[in-house]
Image 1: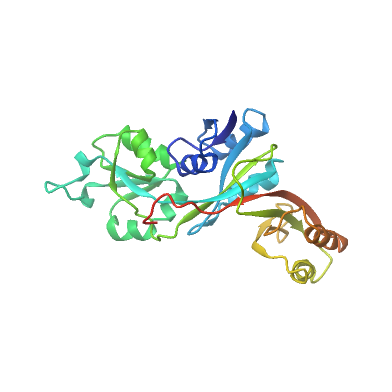
Image 2: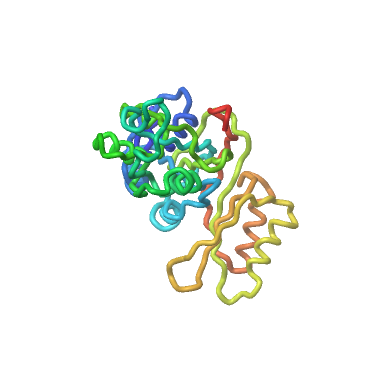
Length: 293
């Protein structure tokens, strides 16, 4: 049986993990904090951690990236993309007017994870400008808080599965500002992930440039360009050693088990760059679970 650590039940991470694992036998271990998710796998309590790493609207999840780079040595074993559809969740008995329509004036506070909240900025500004907004540790935690405070006029932004888990109602479906809102997830751990056939393979590397080599980044990119190796993502993050010192994370649309990619990495190392392989892994295409998304 696979053991997987992830953020709380009823969250986007929960729904996304079930999409990846499908019908496999999996024991899910839920945590409130991303640090506990990572450490569960580091300490051998689980085989994998499920990590949301990037979102269409909000971009990279910097905290999770920093954990992968600075705190743990867990190779990336797979990536997949999941449609992130946020809903307004509460109690119909408290939030609907006499005609059964949603009365926004009855909602005085909205809670959610800051990433989910950011995905619904326009909706909140236009429909609930009077409501207090509160960031909490997860969408599931926000739903639980609404459940535990009946009559307070609170609502949460989160997943339908979270509402069902806590016996609440979906007051309004799909309040995300954009219909093309997706979250990219990584599966990290020490065991290779083998499931269905992948749609493609990727490799992620971390590159630290030599400090006294002008034009080093240009040469790094040239090593990929002349070999026609496609980079799907480049991100710079601080090394945390000194101001102005950065490393680069690069997602490469090629497996490490090729001739071209190891040669490109060797060329990059030859100019004095430090290269860390974060993982070479299968990539799975989007499976739409909601035809309206």
